Length: 247
Image: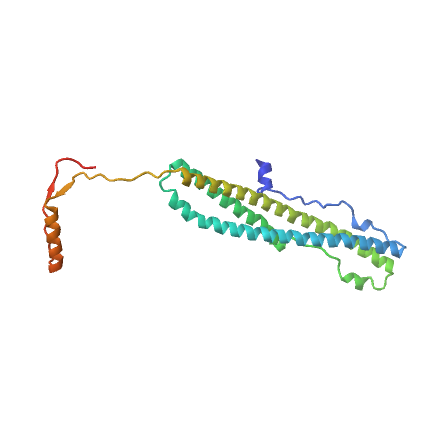
């Protein structure tokens, strides 16, 4: 159960350890300018890959929220139809349909909740090289400047990768909730369709405890017609109760 709850983002504790265990300060100054520049280019490519990955994660998150909102709205329109059609059903069938509908709503809400975590910007502080390095190192050699830039990139990549992994985990939790919600909605629609197809509504009737008999019905109709024509206000019909019950 705990594993299932973690997969849908409930009671999940994120891993706060960095993806890589290196220390950026361990990078030493290289006397070879081309080697330092190659290191910088390599790390820049890794940083750009993480930026592209971030764009993809946020795009998928926005798409998932939009799809969930549409399905959530359609399911809300389905509720009045469901209530209208299940009035005459047995209690156990009503309870089953109600449970399926509530669970589907809950998982759609959980989908939106998990996805919206990625847009809480205060929880995600990305790192980038400081522009102050240009001022503080302007009198230093190019090798020293490159070394500092490499150290900054090493630090930034480690931090940004951890943040992107958190966002990817939130997206995965949201997707798992969305998949379960769609499954429940499919089961709900299937059960509801089967009930509508095979359920025969109970025929309602009425019983007249004290039936009445109208004597001389034809003459009474004629009197009624004449009264309407003459615009009379009161019409008297001779009514006689019968001794036997009529169903």
